[in-house]
Image (tube, each protein chain N blue to C red):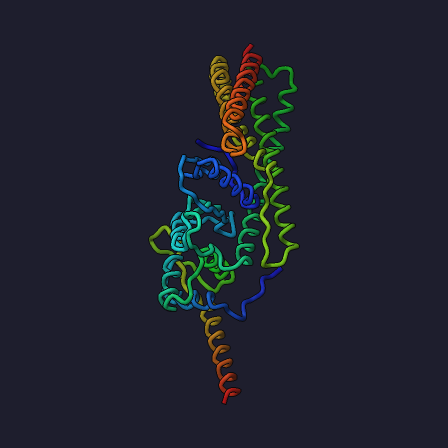
Length: 102
Length: 290
């Protein structure tokens, strides 16, 4: 059975893809997300590696090779599109919210 | 002290129970070697333990660097890794604050289920090879011309393959049961097992199969070099050692560190076990050599 394509991202998914605009490995991703969100989002190791595996299988991130003993990742074109779609969705939600509130 | 125990994620609860019982008896886990040998040290410190599959696939390799990363992240969440591998035992000082290794049970369940599924695929090929080898070696044993080092080679290889087949079969059944039970549970619930029988089989069968394999290799070497006395010497040395190791492991696991036994009872049980081990090993050595 084909895996269901992602349409809505969780906060963790969103930030992992966002920081992967630069090449990073697991620990760098976790630290980067923590820094970017001022500690609001911390990624549990199990969750991070499970998501990286899923993103890689679905083609949202690519593995790049650096001279290290770790798997290094970078967002792919498909991942960029997913991230952009998510931002559009959030913007639309915000517009809807503002229109209701005013 | 040490205990031989196959580290299996599906049977997590029983492994945790063993660690708690050892702790009650004053022993803390020091290391897990090759996912099989648990070493303990005497200590007054108390720890909470947890065990997790850290990757959803045993088929894909996870680099040493990734495991180190994972464990470093777990450390910042309050959990220190005792071993490095696909299945990791973590510990933290008892009662210390910590965060979970997974953000949700659903994610933990996904990873554990994928890992167990991968383990099933990984077990099938060794299982088929074991059955095939058991069959061919048994046929050779029935041949009247199979004698001396030849006989010992086929006998020990057949025994090793028989044990390996049972080991693989009980793990296959157990992993399959884990998948089926968890499939029926809601997404946010996970059930690990606490099968004492599986632990017992895994603690005995795999190490014994490995040792039998070694003996059969020695016999093969002896057959090639045509010097059968090597086999006799190895048998005389190996057999008591094998039984001693097994008895030590079983005693370590189930009796010596169990807080409910008094000191007097432990001494009596140990002595009885020692006598039985010596009698059995001597009987086997003499019946094989003469």
